[in-house]
Image (cartoon, rainbow, N blue to C red; front, side, top):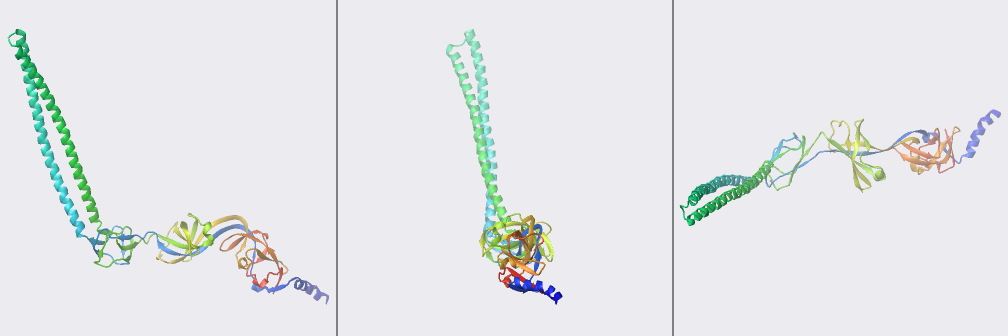
Length: 394
């Protein structure tokens, strides 16, 4: 009887101290440890092509499609052509106008050389007249010195020399000014030809753009027009998807909006393998209690990805070094993150006030109320009915 009382007394005392009893197989426990806590969030993402350009018609006309939806294409490959008689006619007229202005420029150059030659001829004749006037002036000087020439003839020889000098000076100046005017007119005509040449080049570029080419190597997406349909300028024709560059669109809950920042490290789970990534875009607005973001692969891109494929994305928000933490469980929701039950070696669970900090997918930081090595209940605490002491029965 004494031995039975020895073993029964502790159990009776536990029963007496506890107001609630819960079977031990209905609870989950974990030990508080100290280590590095990585704060992260895991969401579902959708694979999208990083480069998916839409091709547009460059002019009004009739389109001929040269590729089908789903067909693989190469960069620079012609995917469609637009027949635009109006643009082609404009190019032909512009080319004809350019040739005509070039001919006019050549004709102007010939006429300019001819007119310049006449002006130089007049200047040369004035030079000859000046030489003759100088000769007559010297003869008059000699005759006047000997007294064999009347005074009036001597003065006339001086006037003739002066007239010849003025005529020569004006003829040379007129020829030089005429050369400058011709050069200016030729330059203006050259500018006119160059302007027309630029107009022709622009029309040729537009005509060449009637052949719509693929800007990337990939696969043809949706065809937005029918074969031989009439299209307008800047009308979308088709989309091309680059299959070598994928990104992941992820919708992150609003509660993590303040922690998100461009450049954060991320992981993408594809078929059981983890691929590193980086957060490259975060929406400035919240829609439907979620923040739109985009993750780009920072290393090798997984093979066999498909457009709109669903993947799991883990974004690493922050890293806390050397903190107390415990495995995450339902006690955070049922206890509001402020209550935990400390399990003792005697099979008792005592209520403790705690303070939690950062949370990750698998752990939560314990700021106060517990010590490393403590074992607490991490399952749902509703069965404990907020009792101060709970007996865990076998």
